[in-house]
Length: 332
Length: 302
Image (tube, rainbow over all chains, first blue to last red; front, top):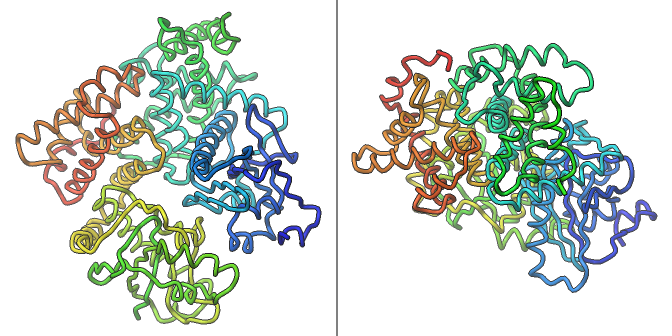
């Protein structure tokens, strides 16, 4: 009998099969016991389920706080026969699925999250457990306790499922190295591996990768990459933008970029946290639209970034048709 | 007084005989010794770990830290102070392993560090990082393998890291060092790694350049990688291609034309560029006269 069941007899292991893969999404919190987001099953595993997968010493050290942390796991159930050679692919699947899910969550709204590659992945099969653990292996337990969370509303599950599917589809499309590298820059900027200054650098590079014209490294008269960043936020915002955002993109972002690119950041008093938030906001919108544009790209059609830029440039004069076409249903 | 300190090195494999780094060593610790450090005796929970520990022994860095005797008293505040002292040395070792092997290790601060002072049944004072004692109990897939023959060069690199620490811990280099270390993050695609690598060097190499960035980057990077004129020409070409890959990605151009010129799979090309990047960084840190020449004006706008 599991220790958890001695502590709480109602904690039953509810998995349908004895072959289960689990990966915590550090920071993610859900209101109910389980959520289906597209083809992903996200479960607030009870302590007994967690105990079947985790190391004994981690269980011993953390079990009393487990229900305070309430971690959420991606759960994959595998039908028998589940031979030993399926363990490694199951762990790889958790890594890529977890990465896509965390990307989708970060693209949806701000919050604190960490991919399973940095924390933990488990495959439990007939009582035999394989674990892949990262440098932040206990963060899925500590982050919620420290208030570092991303809270999923029930109504967001559908959007998240779609976003995960979109990312997966773009990953399997040719000629998408640019958008995928942009997403990796965006994700790296959100990990504890990087300093705030480097995070801002990564986000500035990602802004250029989404909004800059070909050959544009600095703003030009007309619609610059920073003007496009503002346009996309205006389009998405039901209210006029906060003047602080306008002034950041109009007056402060270019000097900030120069400081970063010329290694002079340390010499100036810059609010890097604010810069992070401002840059990430435009990127969340830009990357999502760019993913859509990639999916809708026809073989002879324009570069998806060109499509996005043209749509934003049209929006500058009040025409939303280009942006509507990107977010609308696929032709045919 | 000197305090024996042991830090678990995540993902590092060391041979049975310790690697002497002159004043410190990379070593193994027997399971019994590790239990004593942890303040554990044989128990159901810990017995489970023994087979794995013995089969895939973790590597530890053992070194003395100079402390005020009062810090040797077991106390939470003292352990915190010891941790700060150890962290400085650990940063040096991490940099040295990265620059020597070309691969950035996981920082031991994420694992466990033991301060071998007053041993009690609770073990020794210690600090755990976010991975708890995981890397001490599981080392079946090391990413860095150290052998006896690495002792001399690695010790020299630790000295180099120590001598140049004031420079690379400074803002201008800190950024580049961190960016280069990120390229070792598992699972990153080569496009992201080339962005990180070129990004790491742009600010260091081109503070005075406003036009012809690609050519200036290629020439300066190559000048740091090698002194041999023929090799340098090859490196100018390679560095230029690296910069072109970065520009293609940033400006949403197809990568096909540039990738076709690499003469090697992009993954291999970027890995080679990363290794050269470590050489270039070390030569810059070592005080290359080229740097002064390039940093005539580092304040202008683009």
